[in-house]
Length: 262
Ligand SMILES: [Zn+2]
Image 1 (cartoon, rainbow, N blue to C red):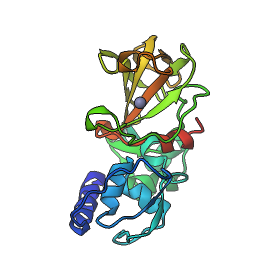
Image 2 (tube, rainbow, N blue to C red; image 1 turned 90 degrees about the vertical axis):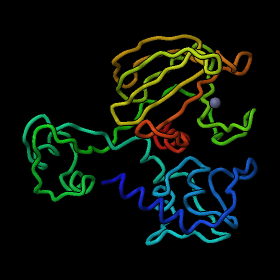
Image 3 (cartoon, rainbow, N blue to C red; image 1 turned 90 degrees about the horizontal axis):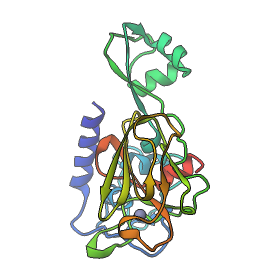
Image 4 (cartoon, rainbow, N blue to C red; image 1 turned 30 degrees about the vertical axis):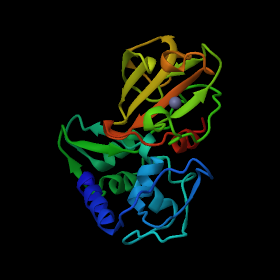
């Protein structure tokens, strides 16, 4: 249902969009965006790696969510952490009531009902999958330095689809959430991890100095060490960090890093 709504919203915005390229501007602030001719909410969301819903929420856009040339939109702060840190999928083990599950999971019945679009009196069958509110992350690199470098131009017409977390070589890299870690070695990314998070997101990290734990891990488990492997050899050691909600296209990790106080 959620995906259907998203597609409908996307299609509507697509119809409203005028031809023209949103274009990523490497100059100016990455925390605000002034709407240019030809841009739509959809194109702005895409070029900044955030969702249309996040922009709409953070800027009080309601109804058909039309943006106008010259509008200044806020692209960070409250409202920009929802994509990365939740909601979590939860499979109901056996027939149960919403009220009982809520008390067990430490959330209010009201919040749980709202998140799932059902009444507080709802009952679930064993095997039903419901949403629980997201948990705070463990920061992937302790005391990392980073800024909003999403979208920065890279060679070959590519653009930067993550956030670089700078820290001394050998600083532990931690799983931000619980999940399944696979170790990958590539010529560009060097020593990389792929984490299929229990929160439904896929997390990728590149340029590590080496691997640590893999397989099933809890949040905070050390899964590697900061380095400069792959095509980052010789650069300042950092973890290139990406988030792929539901395993799809990457979104900007910066708001979620800020939101989780990394
Ligand atoms: Zn990077």
